Length: 183
Image 1 (cartoon, rainbow, N blue to C red):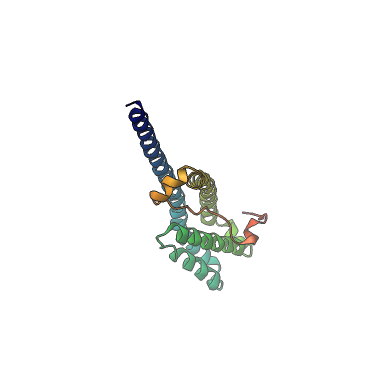
Image 2 (image 1 turned 120 degrees about the horizontal axis):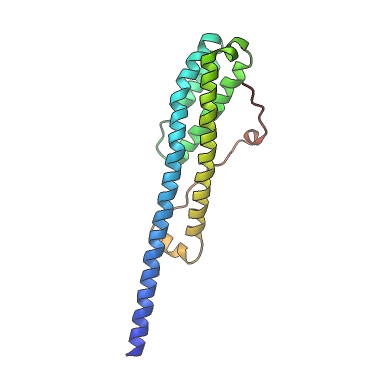
């Protein structure tokens, strides 16, 4: 009789632990989704700002159409659905925006344009928000990935089909170097 009670208690504890672990993993996975969505909001704000920036630059740099076409192409390619594809698109857009700012160095009258200065200021603010949201996203993903990879939680993660999430990282070594930014 006592053995049956002990076995029942152990089973109840194991089932309780499994349910709590599963719920914890669901919470962490949802935190990852929320963190990515936050980053996505800022990327969308930048995405919407780019046409205004390109239009302003076009007026001053008509013969720089190749650079502007790259920016537009990078912006228009941002229609992917998976997080990994969105992260790749984001990297392309970041590079394209850098090209616009580099282009502005060749045109002092463009740098002096108040509309361009305002757009640069907005973009700078959005870039700071994107950087902060990347840090938050990577922090949440690190916690989640660690949780699904460690024993004994990995057992529940495997049965619950909890997949490892990709962290945002810089693939291009040149992007890790210090950048001189002048407005």
